[in-house]
Image (cartoon, rainbow, N blue to C red; front, side, top):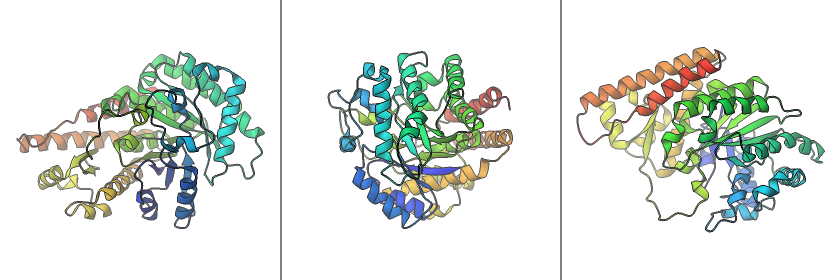
Amino acid sequence: MKLLSQHGFGDGEKSLTGIENKYIDGIIYSPKDYSPKQVNNSIEKILNIDAKASFYIDPQFYISLYALNDGIKLGKLTEWNCFKPYRRNDLENPDILQNIIKGYLKYESKFPVSALISPNIYITRSFDSIEASIAKNFIRYTKEVYNAINISNKPPVFASLVLSREALINKEEFFSFVNDLTSIENPPDGYYIIIGSRSLQSLSDIFDADVIANWMFLNYALRNNGFIIINGFADILSPLLGIAGANACSTGWWSNLRMFSLDKFMPKQEKGRLPVIKYLSAKLLNRITIPEKSAFSSFEKSVINDLYCDALYDPEPKRAEEVLQCWETISFLSNKFISQDIKKSCLDFLEHVKQAKSTYQMLERRLITTDYKFNYEYLDSLELAIDTFIKIAEL
């Protein structure tokens, strides 16, 4: 499975360095944060380093229905000629919808990308809704419109699938939706999947057992039907999604590049402080602070990954280097656990989760102090998610 940079504000040379050092395999660009010219310049620069790097552009059309709201943060999206605001009733018109797809695909085809990603809206609550009906129409028309466009050396075309965690946890509606996707005539070549949280502060929205299990099953079902799957904003869940069948996953350096929420487009009430630099421990499947890294490793050395980027934390990395350690760790976990035997991979990862929990419990007993918080409920969610996925996938 490939690991990609979920591009956004403040890239600098993070993605370039990540590709140069083989921690990641490419980039998913954010039109909100990079102009068309900047994207072209970035791709050209990286191709000089790695001619096999993969490039994609997230259409970010899902913000178009909110683009007329007061204070909405569109950034450089207004410099992309294919982007404009729409109202929901506009998208119920098939002619308008097909013209939108055509405009985006023709515009993206100007860039040397590995695949074109067709636009789509965000299903905010339910698969039994007008939103879901519109979203399915975007998917149904993607390949038809693409085939009618005169583009030389056509790359594959992917449909966007942007789902809220609320939509994902309604199991009956979810399985019906998946069945619809696998029954579409003339389908796209693949899917770019994003699962959204209610806010960037609601990590528990995504680290919910049903959300993770269904996200895995979505990858599993689509891959089994011959589709190429890229997951945006997957972060530490990337190895699990890879086990389930993902071809690629992505994550970035800020919280809004590790987890998706429409918050990143909404006006902020106040400026936040820069987050504390953390270390991603493969053993704990979690990010820990530098003091925690020191304290934990004094009792359990395996909390340290023993990977190349560990040296950056001696004594403390530059902020731009933190994501390199993150990418290296996620790639390490993916390479360790993803295999052709999905059930075995699931059981091996499940054992790793149980060991992480045992390690946390041991550290909690030894470090009886208020200096550290031992919140490892997310491991319970991962454990239940894997068990649930094994059952629903009938492995």
